Length: 79
Image (cartoon, rainbow, N blue to C red):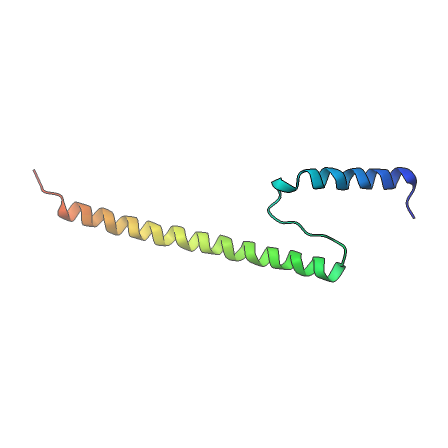
């Protein structure tokens, strides 16, 4: 069991977390361990996919920029 001081500290921490809820991208309520673990796993999976998508997007955009620059050069009149 926890002392009154430990309980007060834990409740104060919870209050501070709730007051900052707008700052969080994800919120996990740890009232059911299996559900909380599944939520964390889902977040990790989503973040991995997101980072891979952005990496591939940057590569695709880089190739598109190169092609557009070549097209502009090909269609720019020479002086």
